[in-house]
Length: 355
Image 1: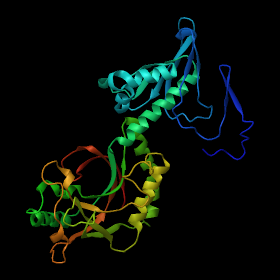
Image 2: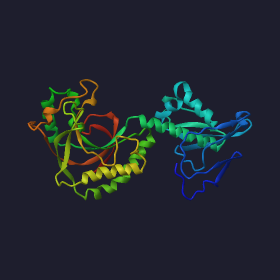
Image 3: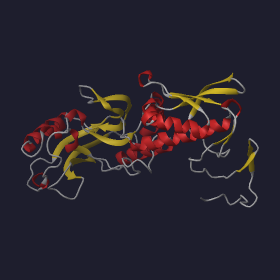
Image 4: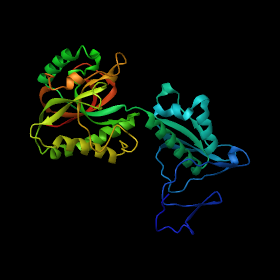
């Protein structure tokens, strides 16, 4: 661990908690220390925390109230945690919850799944035990979040009558090669700017707020001109044309500018700055957005083969490679879980105009 050069490690600043002295370091330690309890009952126990005063607290607090119990006063605090992750805080047979309570000297009340509350209630006797619990809860939630699939995505719809008609012709040409459900619906063709993991109403509202804050930048990035272009050429995601999962078409602007790429890259960078995207742990996102329009994806349905032979499609003799022209009119925040019929294709939570 790197220590600030201005800190004297032989004579560090100290913080006294419950009669014990702790070194204050100027870099965030890795969460995961333990609490130790000294004799007596809970009402008169002394809990010694191994957290530093400058440890970051990432769980939000709400509705804190003081009460008097037998022997000592305690507080009730609500920690904001998405209800989706409550199962990880309970664990099998309540094992995780019990461990958290034993390590921190707190009592935790986790809402039932049907209550759909994005917080947990904590009964604690001092601030250090609460701080220690916050660190552990945040660490548990973040580890679980990294394992979950994205819930939302930011897209730029690619649609025109010509593209819809040509995609229908394309589906007829490939019907002997692939499962019919592996071809994208014309109304759902899009470019993906970023994927997001949003598990609560507050997280969704934060994403919407961030995109609305980004919106005024769009006219300047696009230089006040519409994004006109064409959907053409066929490419695959891997190097083996006889074993393909994803086949996509490229988007080319008529003016051959990089305005579309700049829009995608700057939007993703803005989301990273706002803490909505973790570029280090989320493999779906990267600083340079790979803009492409997926036409075939074998993962869209559980039926049929998981790969197909695209050798003929990628050959120079393939007759349909230009799908038509378009004008990109909007950027949307969509839910991956919910879809509805119609031209929009996905449930849109927010739409930003590009023209």
